[in-house]
Image (tube, rainbow, N blue to C red):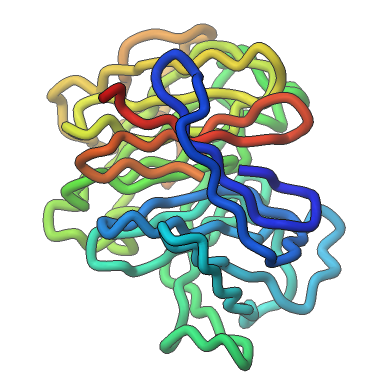
Length: 280
C-alpha cells in the first residue's frame, strides 16, 4: 500500500513479487502506516501516522475487494498520538497501538464507526518496552522501544506487536486482545537486523511471523514462533542479533494474515507497502 500520495492503493503480489492485482480508491490519505485484511477480503488501512502530534483526528479506511472505499475518522480521548500498528480480530474489532517510546497505549473505537462524524476511541490496554540491544533500525536504541507494526493471528488467539528490532508475542486463548496485552504474559523475539522494520504478520497456520522493512531491497523474513507459551520473566541479558524466541525480559510492531490467500504488507522504496498473496 502507498502511505502517501492522493489515493489509496494496495498491491497484491505473488511470492516472486509479481503484481497480481492493484486495488485503487479515490480517498486522499494523510499518513497510512499499517494494514489488516478481514475474512471477506476487505482491507483496513490505518491512517494514523502523526509525527508532529498535530492531528485533531486520525482515520481508518475500509477498502473492499471491488475497490469501493470508506473513510472513518477517529478521535483519541487524551490528545494526539503517533501510531503505526493496527490489529484486527477475526470478529472485526479494530485496535490501534501507539508509538510512544517505552510505553505503547492501545485504543479501540468506543462505538460503531461512522462515515459522517468522528468516532471516539477508548484506551483499553498499555504495554512498555525497554532497550534490548538487538541490532537494526534507523534510530539506534530508540528504535528498540517504539511500536512500528502489529497483527492478530488468523484464529485470533495470538497477538504480535513489533518494534524496529524485536517482536513481542502474546497468547489470547479467548480472543481478548486487550486482556492479553495487559497481562504481561509475552515473549520477545529478536528480529533480523533491517534498516527500518515496520511490517509484521502471521503465516496462515499462525506458527510463524513474516516481517519486512522499508527501503529497497526489502526481504521478507520467516520467523518460526515455536511451541513455548509466552511467560513473564525477570530481567535478563538480551541477545544482540536475530535468534530463537526468548522470554520477554522487559516491563509489562499493515499487517495481517487470514487463512488464504496469504497477505503480507511490506514497505518498499519511497514508503510503499505491498500485499503478497500465496502462489496459485
